[in-house]
Amino acid sequence: MPALVRKDLWVRRGLLKLPGAHVPFWGFAASPSARPVLPGPVITATVGDVILVTLRNTELPVPVSLMFPGQTQVLTRRPATRWKPVSPRYQAGRMVSLTDTLDPGPDGWIRYRFRASKPGVYLYQSGTNPGVQVQMGLYGLIVVRPVGFARPSGPNYRTAYGAQTRTGFDIEKLLVLGEVDTAMHARVAAGAEFNILNFAPDYWVINGRSYPDTDRPDYDPALPHQPLGSAVAARTRGRILLRLINAGFLNHTITLGGLPGRVVGEDGFPLASPALDATYEKTAVTLGAGQSLDVIVRPGHPGEHYLRARDYRRIVSVSSFPVGMMTRLAVTA
Image (cartoon, rainbow, N blue to C red; front, top):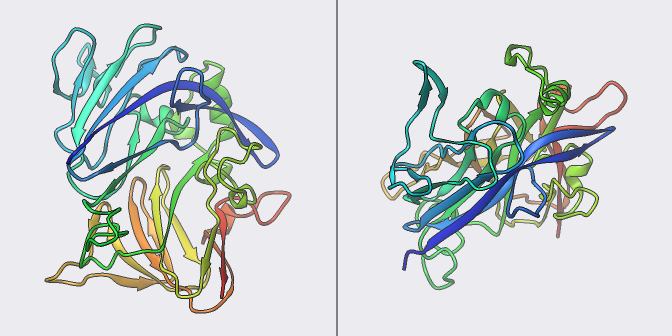
């Protein structure tokens, strides 16, 4: 039976903990008293469910909005209005947002509604001045499960896309890639203008964390604004589903720690069906900005492996190595 999945998101200010720095950011919080987190709260649904997101902005002095790449027939409404399809916003003939916006204020809200039509992992993110607002941290994840995902006797049990898609797994790990320009964050947080053409990131993150913090457990109290760790612990021959998604503006190549991985899904589309198997093996994968890949790794022997950016500038800083876009995969017998 399809369900109604409700999610309330408050736009709030927070402080990221990165190696050697505390960096102001904007993020989504699950309540007006909750801390904002990076990435934003995960929305989980099943195919057929209706997702209803209510956005509020009582802190930032600028309009904000939400976009849902990969979703269709997204509707929106404000107080005392009817549902209508989302659309870009213009002022004096100039586009000011890619979708309907919410002005700052204590009483306002805007809702977005759509049906989860197919399995996959997707971003939600600001559509207003996204060059600034997405980089400041206004993005999060939606995970859509196939029908029967939690039913042990069914063919879709613990699969990413359903039966006969080669996506069955034992362990699932969400890995959201991104980059942080600390000078940009400081200027925007202080209310100053920033020319996005001067964007020059100096931190590289997975789930908002930079190594070695990526190895710390989920909900570590030392990282209150970055609750999701990215380390993986598995047993030999276990099927590890890595759900990589690039929320940044730059492309990232991730090596799989010397292990081969089978790419089984791209951008919410499975690569195998009863008629065709287009899955393929790689030891490193490249994600363009906004792209997602589903990769299954099945280590054959105990050991320790590091998933990391292939570009060494993203795992080295002036004073230390390793840092940045890197995490550990530990395999036991």
